[in-house]
Structure formats: C-alpha cells, structure tokens
Length: 168
Image (cartoon, one colour):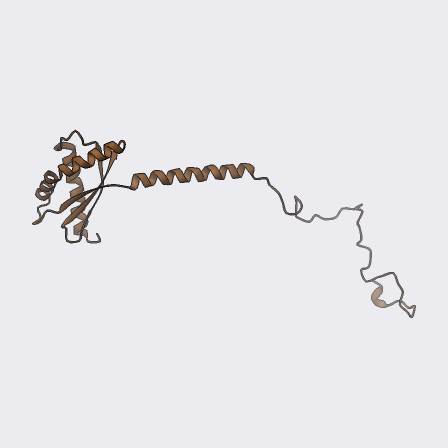
C-alpha cells in the first residue's frame, strides 16, 4: 500500500467498520472487538480487516461468525461512506500480533531468568594474579638481583685478563 490514496481508503474503512461494530451491529456473539489494521489491494477491490478479540478462543470463534454474518451490512455502509464507484469486498482475519507478542514476551522473560541464574553462579576469577599490574620493588625484597651482571658467569677468561665489557 505505497499509494497514498489506497492508504486513505484503508484508514477510512477501519474507522467506518469500527464505528459500525460499536453502534449498529447488535449481535450477541460479537465480543470485545478491536480493528487493528486494514489492508486494501492496489485496485481497491478487496479489503482485509485484521481484528483482535478480548477473551478466550470460544469468544474468538463466535466473534468470527458474527463478523461473517454482518459482512453485508458492513460492506454497504463502507460503500456509502467511501463514495467510490465500487465497494471493496471485506475479509476478516484474526490478528496474530498479540499472540506473537505474548510468545516473544515469554521467551524474553525466560532469557532474563537464565541470565540472572548465570550471573548468580558466576565467580570472579582472574587468569593470573588478582592484581596483574607490576608494582615497584621495595628495599629488602629477597630476590634483589639488580646488582648482579647478567653477562658475568663468574668465570675468568682463558687469558686471565679482565674484559672491559665485563666491567660495568
């Protein structure tokens, strides 16, 4: 429905059908119905009306029957209100969005529970020491080897003379 005219027709059909269901259709099978969306074909010949019903599955079935029986009255009123040459045929479809949203909410709640459970079991454990940063050495450490020459093996050269590189 990229055409603005078709979108305006769909919006108008939604308003007209909702008003008719509220004021003129007096079927006891009709439950608490909400018209959620209307989609009209590009040639404005068919309109699909999506609805939700507050209640249980039995209410949904009885409301579907009531809407099918009131389809002619609703179509004639839509034709009068639109003022177009052809009145679109109406098809009522129960909207699956609330059910899908409920399932997604359940999945997200379960994921939150699992995350909380995992966070509760998690223990902070470091790969090395608890404080991985080097600290400056303090005097009196047992492993003070700064004075020792790393090249000095403690052996004199074969000629017995000190090498200037050994004196640092």
